[in-house]
Image (cartoon, rainbow, N blue to C red):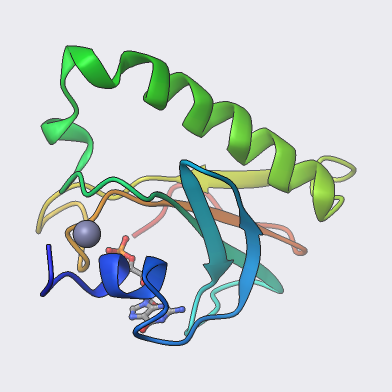
Length: 114
Ligand code: 5GP
Ligand code: ZN
């Protein structure tokens, strides 16, 4: 997926502030943080959105959540609470079509979102 922004970030063709990496996942700081801690966690494999995950991605999807947990601990977000967000499609607010989880924390977050 040469034209995908987040694939290019994984390939280091576009710079990013990396906070975590393993064989399957990459996490980096959001360029427009909406909270004191705002991290984007992505699989290195290109999947456009939650709706494009397939049964063969079952284990990957599980490890994605456990990786979110690991990064939350790394940043101490679990002490006071935080939020994991996955936007899907245009009305869901998705602007980059490579699946990503936002990890937001470091302040009290309001609910519901707009
Ligand atoms: P979405 O709206 O698709 O859920 O989230 C996309 C996120 O990617 C946004 O929060 C946006 O600020 C972030 N973003 C867009 N382009 C870049 C970039 O080039 N680098 C980084 N680090 N974040 C980006
Ligand atoms: Zn991609």
